[in-house]
Image (cartoon, rainbow, N blue to C red; front, side):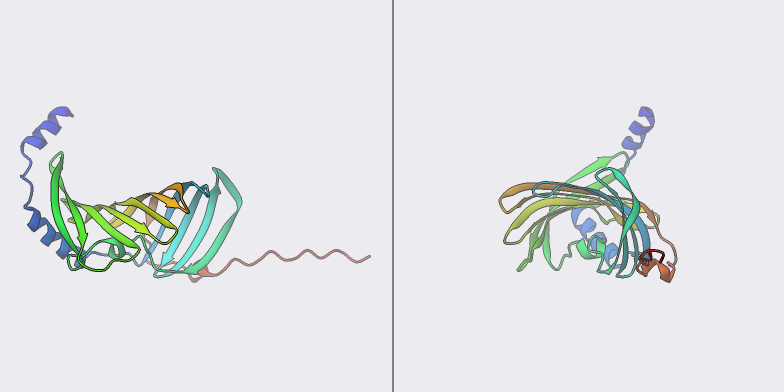
Length: 223
């Protein structure tokens, strides 16, 4: 195994010029394929003013979402808590990846892993910013898409920094983890989310997004 690694490193291609990497990044981002329908599991661990340990399964078709809570504090629920709602996928590469029209990117370094490289950049906003600001990113040298996006976020009572990691799932480029350290009303907090078990069915049945019917109310017999 070591010999194979050294041979791969010895014959590795040199890193691509940093400006060429950005050009390829821009081109690949414009043509990135996004799943319309997906199923996945995410686990969230939060410590701070509010502590949370939960596991959820998500069914998504466009903006329609079925969210099933499977575990709370490590205990599986006998009856899953199900919520049907509608919202955009805020963790998608399309919504999070910074554009060259919005940020200036300054090359920091290239990193080699075997025969592949990744490329680190610092990001500086070109104009006014909102609550979410990209601080930098690492571009994967195979897909030329971000393998990590580093950011800061803040409101009047919450501010923090974090990173979101991406990787290949099937033919798609999907989030794999999100980590943030924050201060909420002056108190420290941290959160980690992991995304696993991706599936990409062609479609989901309509019943997926129908609220579960409540159990009938028992009727006492009349005597």
